[in-house]
Length: 303
Image (cartoon, rainbow, N blue to C red):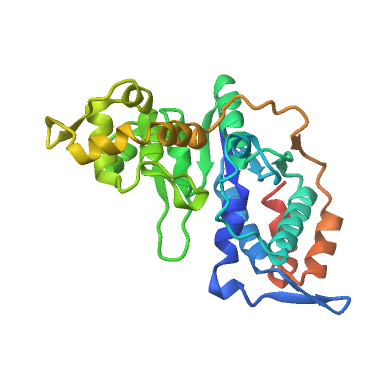
């Protein structure tokens, strides 16, 4: 059996920035309610539903909001991010209401990031013998990839779908998935305000891992090596000093990029009985005219 896990905030955010969707809105009680991201999400999700086999299951996973265990490690985590607007949050609620009326399984918990919920759900389903597909373009999920867990980058704008397998990660980054979190820790992640090693790019991070191993192994010694064009060479004095002077930063970065796969899922997954009468009411309320016009066909895809 196959389990599909949708990184919901990531998919909603991508639709939120699609120019052709940003103008969609409806006036309710004298207030303009934007609906483009919710509509775009629904169309993307409907396509997933149509393309999946009958024995496949889908879970939509949301960020829970609030501080989590990473904020306890450092107050700098995601400190540079702009807060999501009310326009975005309203569309998240609209999307969740529609999915609920469709009887779709959703997973969310305050204080838990979607990454960790997805990692834990992926591990749980894998232990049940399922293969897992994670729908997201977030590179952090590459660390979870294995023969039975893959990441699918959904098609958006000019980008085609891309399936991240162990072979694809080796081709793109030169390292196996088991070392990808180490690669992320070395590179850092500006979007999450994770520092990594200053000035270390994609190529150097790969060469350092190939020559010196994991972050844990790099931290355990004061002499480091790189693999360049198949040859093992000592790190330059500048890079060596940078590593030796940044061990605490590197240790913290490695902790922050790690996706937890042991989060308890009890009480975090909800699924209600489909309510197509409510669904039609929501489509009318938000003026999803195409969905209303093809309503019977729409709900058939979810039955």
